[in-house]
Picture 1: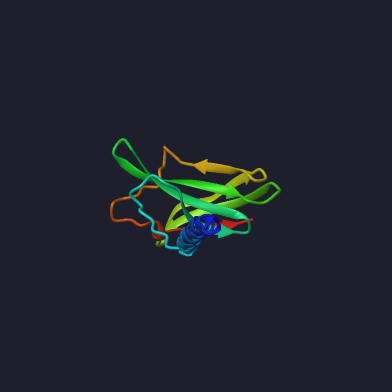
Picture 2 (picture 1 turned 120 degrees about the horizontal axis):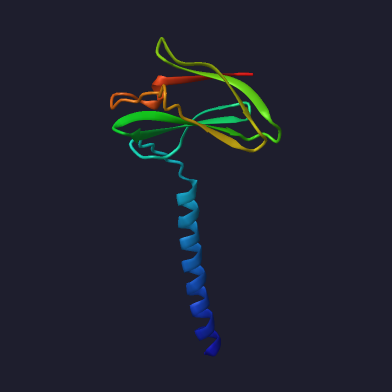
Length: 131
C-alpha cells in the first residue's frame, strides 16, 4: 500500500513535467517574427560576409531618422565601404568603415540625417556593402 501511494504522486509529477516540457519545446520551435517599425529597437536588414546591418528608427526634435548599426561577427578586423539608396536617390555614397573583430559601430549623422517619414519602410532603403 505504501508503494502505491509513493509511486502515484511520482507518476503524476512525471506526466505533468513531460506535458509542460512538450509545450515549452513546441513554443520554442515556432519562429513567428513580427517587426514593429514604431518601436525603438534594432531590426536586422542585411547580413553579408560576416557583417550584420541593423536599422533603428529614432525621433529627435520632431524629426524621424534612421540610425545604422554595423556588427562584425568575424574574428578579425574588417574594412568595407557602404552606401544607402532609396529608389534612384543616393542617400549616403561610399562611406568607409573599419570595425575591429567581434565588435560593432553605430552610425547616425545629425548634419545630414537619413530622414524617415511616416510613409517610409525600412525595405525602401537599400544598403550596399563592398570591400
